[in-house]
Image 1 (spheres, rainbow, N blue to C red):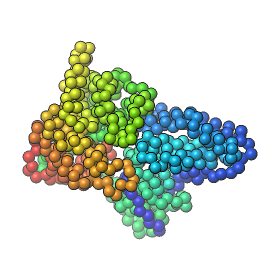
Image 2 (cartoon, rainbow, N blue to C red):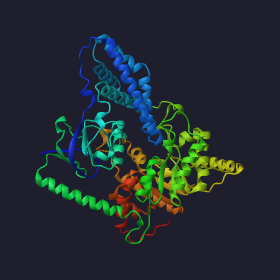
Image 3 (cartoon, rainbow, N blue to C red):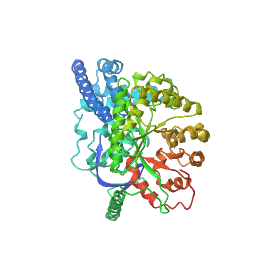
Image 4 (tube, rainbow, N blue to C red):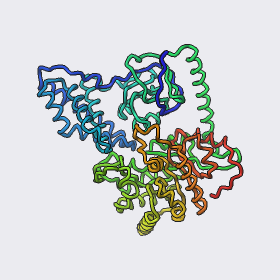
Length: 544
C-alpha cells in the first residue's frame, strides 16, 4: 500500500481504479524528419482541426454563459494569428524536427521568457499557449478525442489538467481527481468543485498508477494506492455512511432555514449562469443571493443589447417566482474582460478599473443594464446590488442614474417595481463606511473573497501564499461583524455572499453575529441548512 498527501479542493470519499491522463508534452519527443513540406502540412491540418474543436467548445460555453468561452476565443485567435505558428514552422524548417517537438519547445521558450512577469494578461496568454500546444500535440499524435472516452467510472490522475480537458470528460464516469499541479482557486479547480467529487491537488502523480485501486480521502487530504483489505473495508463503510448523510441532506430540501431556538435566516444561492439556476432549485435555495451578470458580457464580440439582458433577467425572475433574486451589476475588470471593451492594460488589474468604477465610466452601458433589470422586475422579485463600492459619492451617483432609468421606463410606458438596492461590501473602505453606506441603500452583502485579499494584501490565487492566506483571519470576522451590526443600527438587513458563507465551521458564529442572509454555491445549500437547523443562537436580539 502506498500513501500520499495532497491539498483537498473538494471533500468526500472516492474508491475506484485510476485512469492516468497522459500529458501531451510526454508525446512531444524530438526526431529528425526528411520531408519538411509534409510535416508543415500535418501542422496546418492539425491547426484546422483544433480551430474546429475550439469553435465547438466556444459555442457551447457561450450558450451556457460559461466564462471559459473567453479562453476558447483567445485560443482560436492564437491559432489563426501568425506569431506563434511562424515560430513553430521556422523551427521545423530550419532544424528539420517533428512539429510536436517544435510546439513543445516554442511553448517552453515563451513560458521561460515571461515567467517572471506577474501581469495577469501575460499569464493568461501563456496558459492559452500551453492549452493550444496540448490540443495540437494530441491531434498530431492521433489522440485528439479518445483520451476523453471513459467506459467505466474512474479516478482521473494527471500531472495537470486544463479547464477544456475537464469540460470534455464524461462527468458521469468521474469518481474523483488527482493532479500534481494547480491552485485551489484556478478555473480548473472551480470546475472540479462544481462536479462535487473528491479531489486533491499537489499529489506526485505517476504513470504506473494506471489501473490500480485507489482511495481518495477528501477530508484528510490523503490518498491510498492498493489499500489493504482492512482499510478498504473501513473506507467503504465510511462511504456508505456518507451516502446516507447525502440522503438525509436531500430530505432537507424543502425544510425551513431556522435555528433550534427559532431564529430564521435566508439561505440563498450564488449563480454564475443560467445552468446554475436548476441546481439552485434542486438544492432548495430560498432565493438567489448573487447572480453574477458577467456571463452575459464574456465570450462575445460586443456588448449585449438591453433586450438580451432583459430576457435573461426575466427568465430568472419568472423561474424563481416569489423568491428573491439579487442581481449584481457588471463586475468586469481584473481577469474578466473582453477585447471589445478596450480596457487599458494595468500593472495591477485586481486594484484597477473594475466593478462599479468601470460602470460609472461607461454610463450608457450601465444604464442599459439597469433598465433591463428594472424592466424585468415586473416579472418577479428582483433586487440589485453594486460591486466594489468605496464611497457614499459612488452610491449617490448610481442613485441618480437609477432615477433617470425609472423616468425613461415611465416615458416608454414600461412597467417596473421599486426594487431593493444594495452594495457588495468587499473593500476595507466600504467596511469602515458601512453605517454611512447603509443609510443610502436597503441592504449590505459582504463579499468575503475580495475583502479577504484586499485586507490581507495577498493575491488569493498566488500558490506561494496558500499557507498564509487565511479566510478565517480574525480581522475578516471582525469586519463582517461590524458590517452586520452597523447595517442593523440603520434598520437595514445584511448578508454574506462570499465563499466564507459556505464554511459550516463558521455558520453558528455568523448566526450569532446576527446575519440575515447567507448565499452559497448550490451544492453547499443543504450542508449549511443542516448546520443552521442544529444551531442554538440563544435570545440575541436581531433587528431586521
